[in-house]
Length: 75
Image (tube, rainbow, N blue to C red; front, side, top):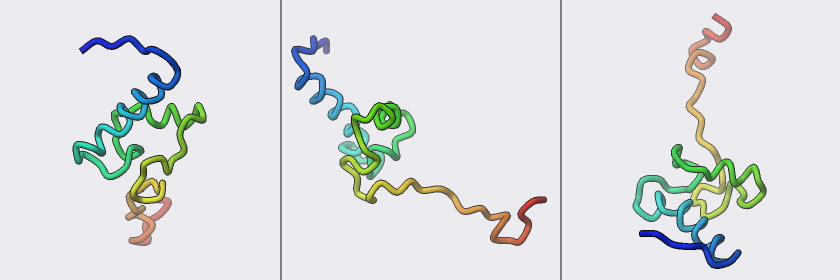
């Protein structure tokens, strides 16, 4: 469906809708966790913080460094 943005508030509403949509549909728990989103770009522009609409407090999950845990770091 086509929509013409009417004003700044309408733009902001649509931006929020876009970035919360993956959470709304249960694909992720937080907007920053959806890898196909422009959310990180908008964080960089100062529009959002990492914690916006977030269930995990803005923590970005990173897998553990298994090499370091196994004692093989630097190999």
